[in-house]
Amino acid sequence: MNFGFWILNCQLWIWFIFVVDEMVVNVEVNCFHITAMHEMSIALSIVEAIEAKAREEGAVKVSGVDLLIGTLAGIEPESLKFCFSAAAKGTLAEDALLAVEEPEGVGECGECGKRFPVNFYYAECPECRSLRIKIVSGEEFLIQSITIEEKGE
Image (cartoon, rainbow, N blue to C red; front, side):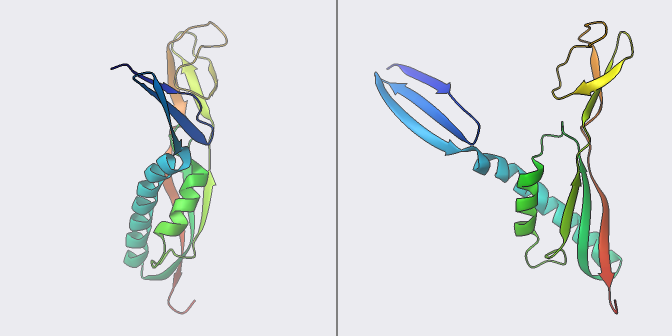
């Protein structure tokens, strides 16, 4: 049995091609569903955390959530926003506005100390060409603040 596997494209769709006994079988998988599963678990955790804090503060509603998600954090903000609206249904955060700040990735060279923008974990220093790079910004993921409404507001 001959078996091959290739990933041809991952813009919005992935086409998998399997070659089994010289017969080609195409399988399409929507990348959004793969990505959204990751963001859904994150959204559920965010809702759980903000609802717990809101209840602790005596809130009746969460009207806003501010997140900090670095571009190197591995989280798709648009997918997270979509998943957040679904995860928040029936909670204090159901109508909350989700705002996301996305700091860019910054690397620092271990040889010359120069800081420069990076968009991937492996980068070359533009000054000395060293590959000894430490990521100093862009991996952040945190809940910066929540806006709550208390009884009587």
